[in-house]
Amino acid sequence: MYIQISILFVVFSIQSILFTKSLRLKLSGIIITEYNRIWSEEDIEKLKRTSKSGELLILRGREIISPSGHLLIFGYYDEVKRGLSTQEILDKVHRKGGIVIMAHPFRYGNSVGEDLERLRNRFVCVDAIEVFSGNQNRDENEYGKRVWEALGLVGVGGSDAHSIEMVGRCLTWFQNTIRNEDDLILEIKAGRCRPVIKG
Ligand SMILES: [Zn+2]
Image (tube, rainbow, N blue to C red; front, side, top):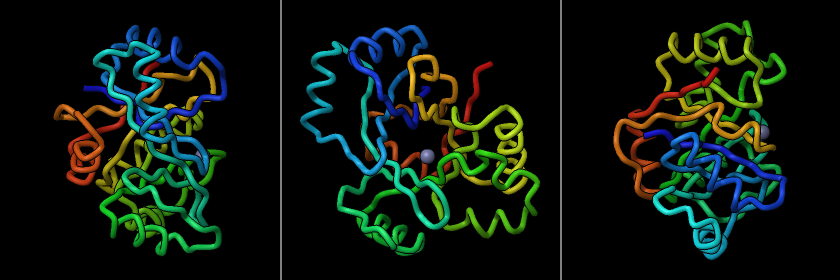
């Protein structure tokens, strides 16, 4: 199954976009991750109802800025105070059973060409890295793939969609069916997923 790991909308009529585009792309699910804001369960339920999304799985997460870069957080809903170190953030999330993914680590050429051992040290603390991101260009995504393969990390793909066009370009394939947030966390922790890029 294919799931859109990170999706961020700044457009209106989100319902129709989700419904039509996700169906057309045959996505199994999407995850809405906004900066420093988490959709409530009620909002997600409302979105499902109003979009008539049917079988489309809709989950929520958030993206935050840490000293190590942008992080995607799933399964953790407490406040993350500014000024915390990356390790402190990770500890908090892990204690509550959540996961942390390094978002678009190669964006703007960041880390492209960087020594693999240094990258291993940087990425070892997170549960997965976003190998392919809609927020990275072709070369950056290429490099992400090389690092992912070389270091044997758990990798995902995410659109980081800020527009309709960006939806579904970078995806995550899961070996098993994801029915809910617990499944998502379990499967990523177990590494039973891989990043996918279209085009
Ligand atoms: Zn970001």
